[in-house]
Length: 298
Image 1 (cartoon, helix red, strand yellow):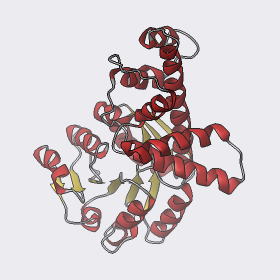
Image 2 (image 1 turned 90 degrees about the horizontal axis):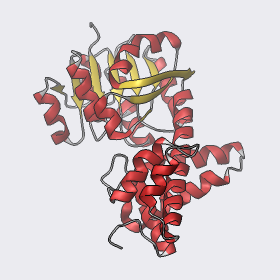
Image 3 (image 1 turned 60 degrees about the vertical axis):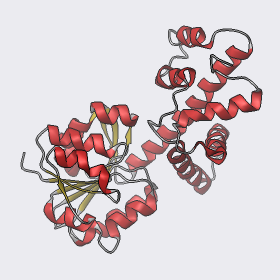
Image 4 (image 1 turned 180 degrees about the horizontal axis):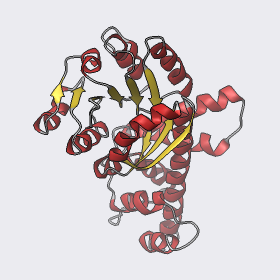
């Protein structure tokens, strides 16, 4: 295990991913704009750096997992960014969810310095990050993917090399489109059951045994019924992901109405103050519109 690894962005997802790398024996250097997030990592053996540049100076493979496209651009290309510390032959692995076109531009800038890049966004939420069972969608050169795959296997269970640089981000956009639509569909179905006077928990149980079964209905349907909106994935981040999806749709001149409706629902949830809650909080918007609630006490 000769690769020295850096991780920038030990937040809700990044912190458990970093801990899994440490448990697997990888030496790890970390940076966070919120220093308290690095404390559990230091206790587990990580070294804290003062900037992304310093992380890159110490490591061979640098993982970034931050909120949005401007954050990735700053961490990678900013004044104390990775590009100023990475040596030729090193690899940047961006596991954030950002624009595919921006990813390609960043990769081109890194390539001029002899630094390779993979885009490897993830799905599976904080539970998948903690359990090392994430779905990882990867874009980039096959030989670079092969080099980094042992790290992916520590963090994820489903690891697919989708295509060239940017392909991982396209796959993640498709993922977020589907999740948003499934969340809305699950919310609407359970609320219809409740409005009809039928136990939505029993309806969910019945549906999980048939063709309508889905991971979203299983996990997020239970969240809705239990009123558990502690974020596994924040609504404000899903709003950002759906913005990226709508930008791509507009650029391509496509008409995808279900995606637009799902995006509108998440936007409304954030506008109503639910941005820090789990993306399943969209059910509360639909509840208010229809004067019905999945809350057992209402």
